[in-house]
Length: 416
Ligand code: UD1
Image 1 (cartoon, rainbow, N blue to C red):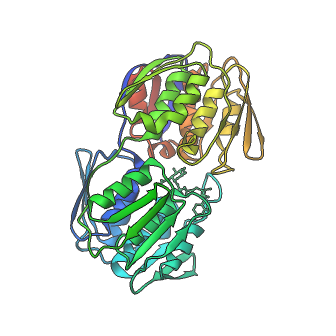
Image 2 (cartoon, helix red, strand yellow):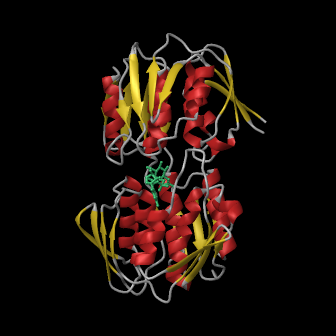
Image 3 (tube, rainbow, N blue to C red):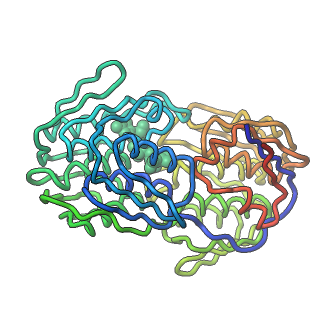
């Protein structure tokens, strides 16, 4: 199994280009299933999660090709309505095929996702909403057995903001009979991207505000033809990498306004930031100040950058408190960071981090994608050579992260 060997101490310097957003590509691929035809998704990075979703779409009967960062999906011959356990248990976003299968074939047999490395992640909001739209759902032998004659518009209120459930309902509503009102829709950039994608395909989606959506079902949609938005989490990870190594990095091909919450916190920590239409330049502070963060739905601080920011706080001056409100158990990186001589205590869904002068190397491993990224960042500043195993978690969401870091001057190599 691959490992990363990271020798800490080099300041990152230079320019780095950001890839398309994994969390936008995955639902866009599911959206293609709503149509019968040839879809094209551009600016797609070669990530393990995208390979897994491609595999799932092939099982369903889609012809999938990937060339020059573009996915070509031919959904004319889809007919198999199943998402098997082997795939859904590895990648929860597989649940995204549920609505398109129901919209197109009136039935779906999708495995329940089960537990996950970042804690309990229920799908009750997805299922309750689909039931309101007329879907009959039975949970049998670990699978969701769902069927419907014709999806019907409904009033959907989310008592919690959910990216996944909002996209599930949007995909069900766009070709349903009648009108669906979605109240308290998630407004993460990836949700807005999917709304705009569906509108370009002929969907009728309007809103009183971005959190209150009105979807009038249409008969048919055009195939997907889209360029994916930049990955705000990859961009944020490189910005934090610049800060933790006291570097000077220009992140290009990104969308700065998707990253305001992080920019604000990096400035509070003492970093200098400038940005233009599609770039952010960060010059790290010599001494990083401790900063508190609380994760929240967008536009609040994203849970997907919590682990990386926590890594930065391990070498800040003073004590910081990081509160995780989206996935309260998402702290598996903490014991690993403590192995690198960080000083972090956990108190329920809070981490209390006492900044130390220096981290030192150790063998570490991660249990999830963003925790792996946090350990890479810690390794970049730790004294000595840190070995990170289970790199497959990192490869789920970052395209050749070590190559990009090498380009910025990091001493990081992959060993097979
Ligand atoms: C998506 C992202 C993930 C990110 C998360 C929050 C993808 C593929 N993944 O995950 O990277 O960390 O948004 O920004 O886009 N919840 C329920 N019931 C449900 C659904 C969700 O209680 O049916 C809860 C979750 O446990 C969590 C909160 O709602 O506490 C938000 O989760 P949600 O936005 O749905 O996350 P995902 O869509 O799974």
